[in-house]
Image (cartoon, rainbow, N blue to C red; front, side, top):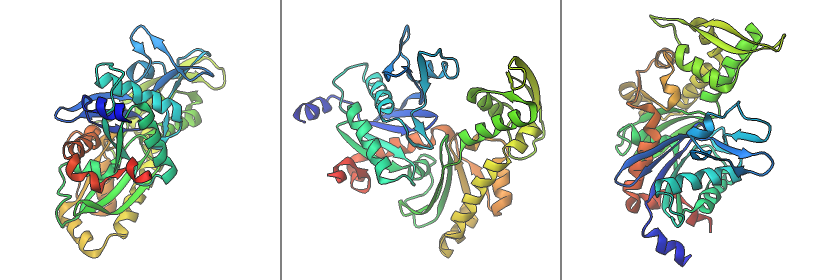
Length: 352
């Protein structure tokens, strides 16, 4: 414990947006210093992280291997629906990121602020604490994702007025109304970007008898995906495996077809927003007539989603600046003022 405190004096305090798809790391005084996919490649049956010419197969290196590994290697995304699904791999990933930020120094024991979905259980929180501690953190603080996203979007969350954020990540959608620096109402939905990718893959399987991987589905979503009709809509050539012949082949899909495939996950997100609004106190609901709804996270970049939500709720809906880094920027703000705000954050100190 003394050694951790001593080495902690020479460690960089870190804020981590531990996402299902991507992990972003910020450092006090520097902002975001690392943005890599939450993917680790390991040797099968050993959980030993694969070594490559570029170093450990974590992040960008490992993502390139998804769906392309031989039988002896597995590329794993250790987080599912915003929470830790594989404890050991998450620990290895965090350890890699902490060491990378510290120039690969082994004796780095920083204080860490980690954003988490608002709806996770005590057991799931305990897994975050344990993973971070075993990866080298000497003190771990947790902040709910919607709070971090709202702060990162520069919403007036410290004022006595309602601010509404819809943070659509890879594994979860966080819908929250905030006021006076805290969450007034929140809905945590385990339907988000990954479910959109799965909906696209299922549509191609059902309609074209074509099997595609998650990376191809994500590319389709980014290239021609939309929630509402757009002025310019195109088509895209997709390559995969024919389910009948088993041979590789290609097909052309249109933006209209992909929009139809995305109707279910988009509809579930709209329902979560409506449920949250229905629970708001009358004064908070009145504030939102003027303040509107703000979209953050990678899912906010889906074309036309703001239009669909505006039509569903009757409120103004805006996509925040740089929605992909919104939660990380908020985590960075908490990190900058950690000595002031740490009493309001959940901490591993509370566990003992």
